[in-house]
Length: 62
Image (cartoon, rainbow, N blue to C red; front, side):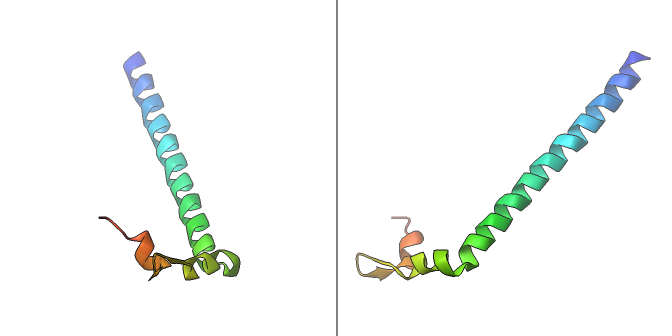
């Protein structure tokens, strides 16, 4: 009988933590999109580094 109650508890805890992580991911995505499209922070993308525009400097993987 106690196994059934434990399974319910685990099921709801799993749902709760998945929802919290999904919500946190949405918040991070929202902040990232806001920073990307904000006029004050998007001016950072116009900077140059070693003669290259900023989007190219952000994607360096050498």
